[in-house]
Image 1 (spheres, rainbow, N blue to C red):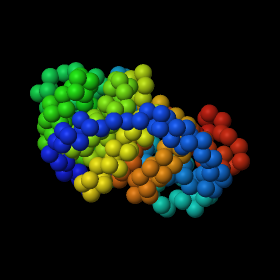
Image 2: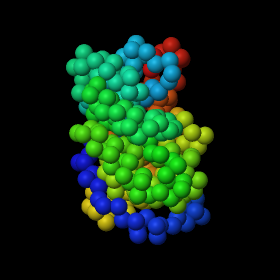
Image 3: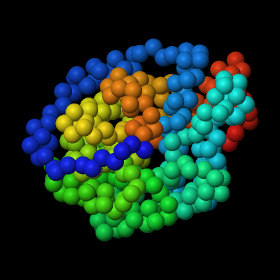
Length: 318
């Protein structure tokens, strides 16, 4: 993870003056999506880079200790070893960036990783995920319990009501309290952009989250009707750039929800490289929140190595 973002005092003047040019954002998003994708070994290299930035996630009502254990084993060895060996990448320590689970499953994940002698971080969603509509006291306690169970990264959700009604001071204060409850754990702040009404609100919520000490800002819970889109990402990464230019602190970015194909993962990496530079092409400052993306990347690596796509049973169970 990156160096911690200490945050700053709430600068309401900066927040209130912020405006987003929607047409310019949409035009830029089209440009990014229109880029030609790298082929052959260059594509394989980009895809392996994407694997190292994945927060491998399971957030289902039927999660059990056994499927969390399987998720952890997959995170430790995301690509078949023989395939990595054939492209001379077997000794590069390729794992996903973290595993991400519900608070009640953190202890299971921590136990599985410890048993496998892995230092892979456990991320936990918290603060009344996904809606954030529980009492503040409950949301704070959820963060503390997840940290106590072994989570070193906490993905909090903001109270959308405060953002929609322009209560930026109240939102700042809440996130500050979450930051404190995280202790030494890194904090990713989920904006739930599908419920923020417009791009200007997304930009303002991004700024307030960073001012309050977020180490990452994240698009979505994956449970909203609109999740990670390229226009929203451009708004958020430009807020990250503006915050960096003003404070000197680098804040990470995590798109999540609906990212399913290998090609999309390369577009996301391209967006980060063009908008924020090479520093943001590492898991310290960029994460992909995904559950099914890895399976498609595996298929493409299999094709790169063997020249054909695998039958269903030829890939390990995710």
